[in-house]
Length: 109
Image (cartoon, rainbow, N blue to C red):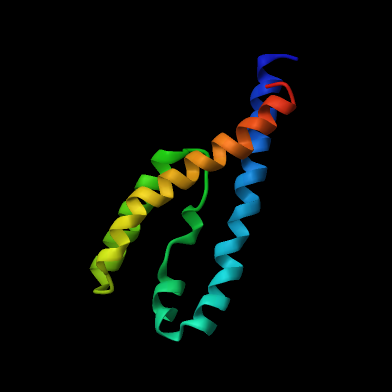
């Protein structure tokens, strides 16, 4: 298998896993707003189009920084958002370590 084929397969595995998790914010926000009506403005203003991508943990840090700045600009920021600086990059790391990495190994990458 050539290195180009390996790169394409690795990209497809990563995009497939990340794309599978992408639907959750879109589908989940209607459930969140039904359960917690006071979070409606937050659920429909969060930039979900940035979730997840090929940049790994650095995308997570940029996403959290952007979300904090967006909420701050709208006057909706709350201190608990600072925990996202730890949880989002950690989530990307765990996703790639336990799901994408083993799949890459399984297909021989």
